[in-house]
Length: 203
Image (cartoon, rainbow, N blue to C red; front, side):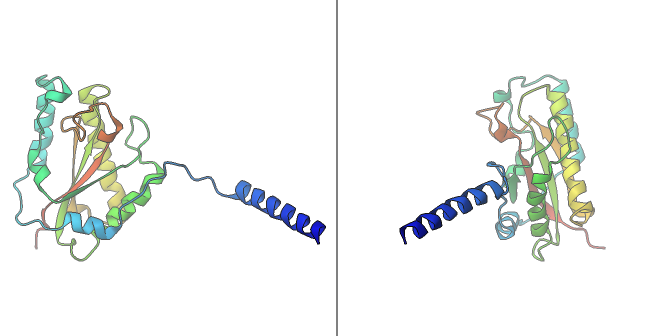
């Protein structure tokens, strides 16, 4: 019996070792996405349509950079403070470095976002995708990159997840409205916001 027990223990150890070797290697920093019901709650509750001119907002960001005002990141006031008062949620979306290409790991996050936008309670609404960067690099390059990233997310939501492009607008704010103003160079500033901005126009 003792030799039989030793044999069973040996088989158990070999089996455990095989399972460890055969287990798929998932990255330790795999992204987690909020359940759609949480997003629906965060994006609901718009009481009245705000007066947000997205084209003017883009122009304002460009002009502030050209004028070289508020050069120090910590001295810059929010460039679109009105967005802070609207229903919204923010996400970590991984891109290739200095690129608008979304990494495959983040498609799950965007899929959750699309699920929320497709919920009947949110179907009547329009949304603004806002991309941010940290303060590493040139301000003008960061602004351009953030706009390209916001546009890339809109394209994925519409082409891959079939969200109507008429419901989504985009703006890139670069480092002009830091998400973590106390730490301008931190990765926590590399966030994507989605903001509820009004109802879909009725035909």
